[in-house]
Length: 558
Image (cartoon, rainbow, N blue to C red; front, side):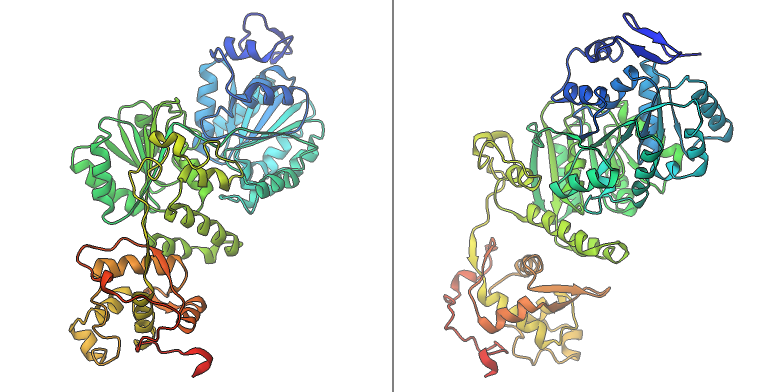
């Protein structure tokens, strides 16, 4: 048994090719005529035995950057990959091209594992896929330490996982550096789709890259249209979107398994070609659903965020984020699974500030909640922004948008530049905000948004009467806004950090910033669209000298 020997290749010791060039391998083995941007430069760097860091968006062709050198270099290539499904897909793809590779992970039966190890020892394997957790085990360490095993390249896929500033930090990735010490002559290539400057520095340091060549392709996926909608009735919004994207292939991402299943069942009942995908499904069912989607036998997959890594499906026409992602990196990676064929694709994000509270609930289990909070704030700023979304996205990754404000590409850029979503006008919301903040204080900061709004609107429900809140100064003073407007204002106040939700019942409290606002009585202009039935236009102009009678704090304590 050995590797396939292609025309014009010279085969040595069963699995080494010499006198080969990357273009020949690209065409003869993989069947492509041309390299994608930076692929050839990256490959030449690895072949020159230089450590290499590659930041290349999803769909940019990262896999070939290490697979082609693996065929040319003497010895084997170790690929550290985070997901079992990604490994199996990569191995299956390589086998189709006649390249024998294996993966070593917990999904293998013991006989399969022993067979793979035997083939590695005999030199029949060019590429070995292993998880960072598996790489740390003595069993795999002993295998790699075999005297006749030559490792020419160590590849780190999803390299952002080595950084605590990365969006998916994995402590096991920190063990990779010790493996590098076992093979000091091996070249290392680290690849990721997303990396800020801080993450780049962490990758270089934590992996011990030696004066690496750094290649960064543009983060601008020009063929993906970016849209954000306030999430009012999520399921209805998804259905409205699908009506305009009939028979197109797409992914809908949800945060929880329950939400995945609920949306899947609902869409299935309405006749859509749809399946679900999450870790709660049996492995064989999950694998079957994934394969049916890849083969276009089902059009839509509703999934949790792990779905899509390593899947080569070029014709995904849309990605819907049903819930707010935890970070811009996560969002960018998910939308990057659309339009890999270069054809127009659509990315829709449904945003509500309620998602922020759900995400923060899990921060206590994180190694560094402060970093997670900073990433979340960047995501919120992107979702709630009123300027070109493409420009904001690229700015986050340190790239300047060539079209400036995005107007040059307004026909296919984002909802704001194409006027699909009108920028909300800045409206003087000072008095309504003061009323709302004061009502929180008058009700002793013991209730959620719905209760506070009912008090402002003068509701005589049993709870309000029993608590005596029909007798406080803020009762029934909020009729200038509708109930829907008040709820929209709550989202803005949370977003601007004038108030915060606490506890499992989402009780509202004023932040220090909110208390300061009551003391200073400063004018507050917010991007706010007033409902037709509201009376906000009748509000008097609010200046610093105004002293509404319901204000409970005065300057200097007077």
